[in-house]
Length: 234
Image (cartoon, rainbow, N blue to C red; front, side):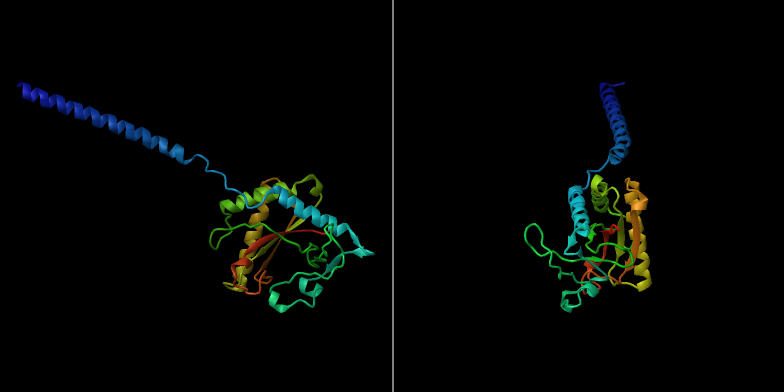
C-alpha cells in the first residue's frame, strides 16, 4: 500500500466519522425539537382585569338595591319600551336615560332596564370573546378574557349573584344558522367558566342569534358578541 493510498483511506475514514457525528447530532436535535414544541406558549394578555369585572357588577348590584325616591330606579321591559322617545338613528336597542337619580359625582343616573324574560339587568359586560371562523371553539385571547371574568364574578361580594350569558350574531347567514351558532357559542363560554370553577347554578345561558343587534346595521361585526348580565336580586 503506497503512502498516497494510505493517506486517502485515512481521509475517507475521517469523513465517514464526521458524517456519523453529524447524523448523531441531527437525530439528537430531532428528538429534542418535539419536546421544545410542546412547551407552553406565552400566556395571552387579557383585555380587561378581574377587578374591572367585579367593579362593574358590584356597582350594578348597589344601584339595583338603592331606592330612587319611593322606588328602585328600574324599568321592566326592553330598552325601547323603557325609552319610547329614543331617536331611531341611535340604532339597536338604545340606552335609557330618563331617571332623575344622581351619582356621587352629580351626574344623572340612567334607569336600569330589566329584561322581563331573564330578569337580567340590561347593562351588559361584553366578554370580548372571539371564536374560530364559523365555530364555537374559543380563541386563545377569549380564554384569557374568560379567566379574568371568572375571577371577577367569584369576588366574595358577588358570591350569591347569578349571571346570564347571552350569545348574539350578526345578520350574515340564515336566521336558523345564526340562532344555532349563538347557542353553541354561549354554551361554550358557560362551560369554560364552569371549568374555571364558577358554579353552574350561577349561570344561565340564552341565545338570541341576530334578533338583538347592538348597532342598527344587523350585518355589522359589532353584533357578533357574547355578553354577561347580572340577574336582579328579588
